[in-house]
Length: 341
Image (cartoon, rainbow, N blue to C red; front, side, top):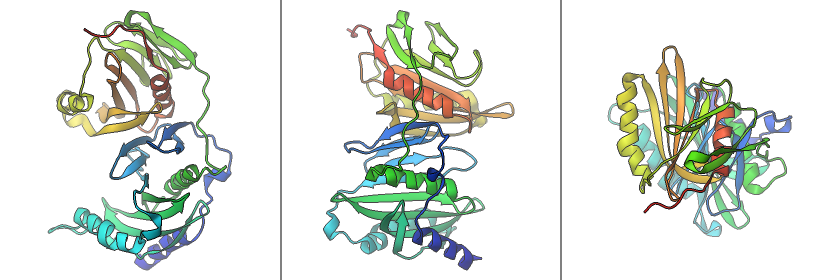
């Protein structure tokens, strides 16, 4: 069985991938930019994206049942003097071993070999690292490409029993980095200006979405039926939270833990969450309500005179429209509130 799976990985590496992008694309997508670079990637709207200096831009399916992610990083190294083989042996493999091998466990099935791979028509040098986690065989694949005088590192983590969506995501990322005509574009939405005069702000949303406003909660836009999940809330505070990320970690996440207890299934905190063309502190919380799983994304923006809090809430795995609405709200937000004294 291991030899069959290893052969399957080798075929994935050796052959160019030409998955769903060649077909008509019905996916609702939003745009994510790589900081400081002329790189924009259109990702499925419900996917999550965040940036960290050491790992670059991560794009995650963020779906509890089939989680996978792709990463892209513009490396600081000189491409002409860079050795992929040395990097894999001296940097990447020791890091993975420290994570997946311990005194009482070993999740590693195969450390792979450095080899040629072709992704989105680009010939690269890559290496697969195969794992067994939570009853599934998974692969962590890293590849290096040289593009326009820069060294680009790609990483893909996915389950071997369903590689297609992950490989399509990686192909999307590579096409976007290289500016290929096959790279998908962000979906165009018909939007209208939504105003909250009491809090002196406005943003954009689909005019067909029901909405309601109150001073305590701000403006709520329902992406299906009024009064029910899913929805997006935009609220402008009367104060400024200077360290929004620290506030989220030290106060808001503990509040969620206390509120939902064992019903809080998982959560993630992001210092630079990609939304609305910006990178802002955000938390993602998944919790159970009776027999349903609900996901909430809460974004904090303290770049203006007052802190603006955006909340998107939807049934887990069904967040495309709601995350697209959140993206539009952040991108189009404008405030006329007076500066705090």
